[in-house]
Amino acid sequence: MEKKMKILTDKISDYQQFGTVLLAVGAFFYIGIIIPKMDKVAGYNIGMLITSILFLSASILFLGKAKKLKKLLDEWKES
Image (cartoon, rainbow, N blue to C red):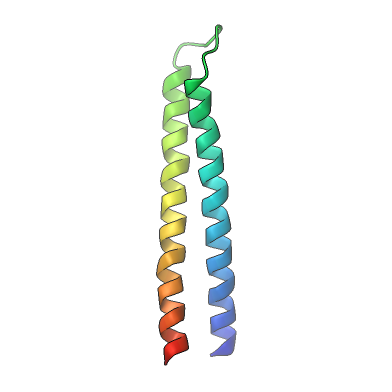
């Protein structure tokens, strides 16, 4: 049981780190849309917007998964 709890703790840590990194990268892509640039290529804004949405969605997915695993770990610790 201790080994499973250790593995679960490691997964929670990894998912939180993945979520945080993806959130930061998604925010940088979003900032790239906001900052005006003179020589933008056609479709630049749409590509950056789609990429930003994908990164932010993946961030939400990983952080949600970490939250679920943390609840599971808390339940295991109680019993």
